Image (cartoon, rainbow, N blue to C red):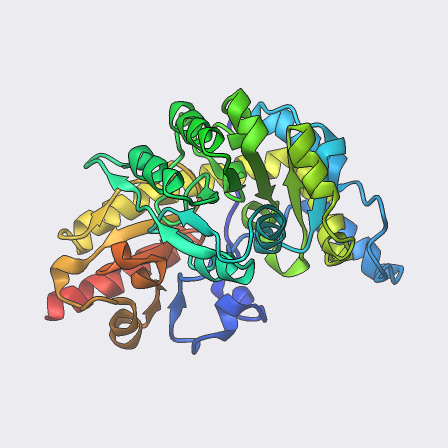
Length: 387
């Protein structure tokens, strides 16, 4: 049975929001840059937050907020992944978790591998943890992107101590195969390194795509890996501050249990309440409806680009609501986003912020109404025709 349709909120309602997406640019700019979506919250989340406000439940996050158990249930139902809730801790957001795990597993000055083009906070987070960034870019196969396992192996053999993985990958929307993840884990195990996997986009894998959590990819992955994730991207909860850190081995669990108690205290109470509600079975129908809407939009984006920007290069992503688009053929410079925003009044994410591989690229957030996406790409197309 098809899910009940989920429609984005109207622009006049969205412009009343006070978040980054709606307060960074003037009202005549269509904001398709930062990873916030335009849909109403899942009803169980609205209900739990409304009740908390009504009774003044705005104090400290309790020692056992139920996040671990809720996440384990979600992982079993939605990701076919058995997670022991006793091996789960929580913190304020995914990058906080990444920094704390890296601090606990590398020494100052150790090199940490990342795979650009990749989420811009990865580099600064590695540095915050005391590490030094080593880039091993994804391989563009012509049909998609994949990890450069020989390049990662060489960097590990040369002394890199950790890999910061994005699975599914932001901005390309790539879902790494089990074989690729197992190969990464084997390389890390051979060289005594760890893998920290940002899996925040995992709930958003599209139909027909097989997703493998890193910790479930192989026995090596369970031994060397740490997964950090949250309901925040799928359910639009970034401002409420809650993420989970999961492990699958006695030694990695010992490391996470040894993190300072402040790591958990950074979790917002509303973040914990909303993540528990999001991960509950009661919110599954909403997530199914969201995925159906995003599936339509990722394909609509391909059609719109073919019509309005035929020289652009875009691959329909395997996961998420972010489109990675090469518009270098239009001659808008290394970073096309400022000109597009200035002249077309559409705000897109700056491609070079994802690494040198992002030169000439933009990232488009298609987690919006089809009409908004259509208008945005039509505006950019008009800019292209005007040249």
